Length: 308
View: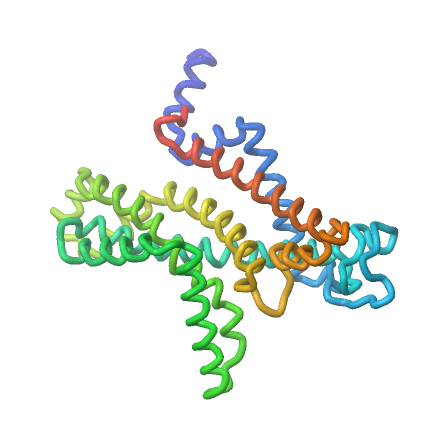
């Protein structure tokens, strides 16, 4: 057997996932973007473990609005806080919000979409489609603000009545999860409607496999390529939404984020001080751009029609 025949035989034996990995690593921009995302993830992990940015909230009254220096690499803000450390610490906030929202919203959308697609044409499908339609017809930021306010109020009542603290921290997370799952549910529903008519599903029905086992063991795993891409999209959307909501005063509480830094900069920019604004914007831009390119490369790699 010639080398060319051996190569063709090896390619035939490859699975969709191995082909996707091979194609992804042929995309230079995708690999570079993935490396940048991994660098941000390491920074966030380092902050969470207390390796750096431990003095992000420390006040330096005598060093207000200073420019870059050996002690303060990106200068200080109006309160004398180190802008570089705050920008680094905000990476942890961004990843925390992005991961929580992306994972929970994607799982919720997967379950709802799978059930809706499997029972398409029944009252279950109609019920889920009605909920999705109701959520999608409300303007995003209005809906998130309303849910966030409601969760905050509930958290305050729980704190006052039962002494339960910290729940208000996740108000924005819950608000975004309540919105982001609908897009995933629609895509999964369409895919499940196609999958449930394939031979392996009909064979499972024929031998008496229970419906829940068919749904979650045989059908749902075949939508994983969609869920992976949707999770990356939700991750970026959650970070951008957090920045906007924090800028408006509706975002994270008792911590710092790029949105809060940009909000602080509104008092500094009129005075000609741009360090806070540029630092937050640059960190945000690089991460979002890298993740968008990575998501596009991942989507191309997982597309069965393009994998070769």
